Amino acid sequence: MNTPKSLTERVFQAIGFEVFAVLMCTPLFAWLMDKPMLDMGVVTIANCFIALGWNVLFNGMFDRMRERFAMAQNGWTRMLHALLFEGGLVIVSVPLVAWWLNISLLQALILDIGVLLFFLPYTYAYHWAYDVVRERVMLRREPCRG
Image 1 (spheres, one colour):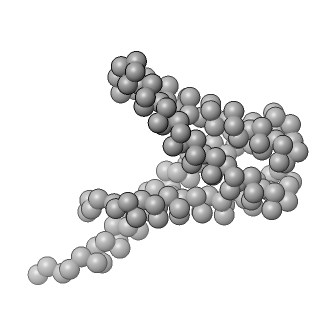
Image 2 (cartoon, one colour):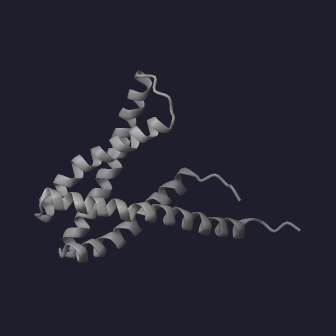
Image 3 (cartoon, one colour):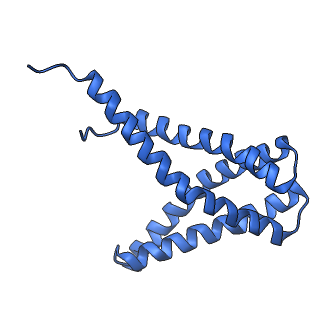
């Protein structure tokens, strides 16, 4: 089954992704960092909003840069995009996390690396599970043919 997702469904999927991430990351990182749950919750939610805003801003700037310099959309361009995107996110989020949690920049950077290591498998698993559940729901809604 390959029914395209509507904008509403994509928003629902993205919100679910962030909600589950916050629910898992907050207690995990509060425990690992020995910080209050409220502090880690604020940091986690703030980072979600920072990443969302940076995503919109950066992708617009990168697309204009790619057009201006006539860069091909290939593996090297995608690698440059990923490195610049993550680098910009680190520059913004690491000092904020260090300040809010009253930790060193190095500790905040290590936490950021931990977040990245969490999100790689989480992203894979969440979207795979979402697609499996979605397919089952769509099949139930499909009228019987017979």
